[in-house]
Length: 255
Image (cartoon, rainbow, N blue to C red; front, side, top):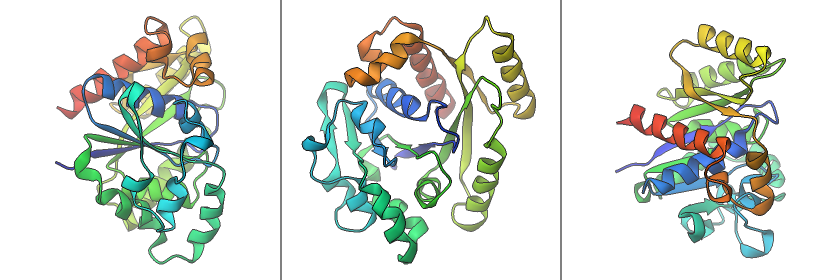
């Protein structure tokens, strides 16, 4: 059975994309799902957030995109969390330049994933904070996209541009690309602004905003520096519980 491929995307930085990619992957793995996490950000934060340093891999997503290695060859099994990872590092910046002259450059990731799709239940792609060729590759390869939105001023900044990119991808490369949902992050129920942003999102995107929201949480912020998903760092904290709830919500919608 073909894996469901989900991109985590928003070109606005600091909204919780990587945090969501890591912890949703961990949540799905805990339920027994076979998960592949693809780090498509040159910063490599999803890689380091799972405790994987540069000296632990020879190949990464860069080598896959330029056709030098297969997804399978570049994959690391992170046994501690039952997640397979295609890592990334700063070399991926070079891919953005090299892909400009590649034939069918928008579909390189899709073609690579298709050879491994039957091995997984879910493939999660952590996108970079931009709408360049790497994010386009992710959207073309995906069945759906989760859009984290920060519950602060300018929360909607960039969302319209991302939605326009999604429309263009649908029209040109991937007609079935769906918005899995908007995920409200850094939510503070004591803050009127958070409540206001949440209400506005639910009005603008009725039926497309996850019921789960991710709170501001110290343990959630700390866990990447320990190389662990928050579920493994402090399972009882509010951040961990929110991502477990998101996992349940995603699986219930898929069933």
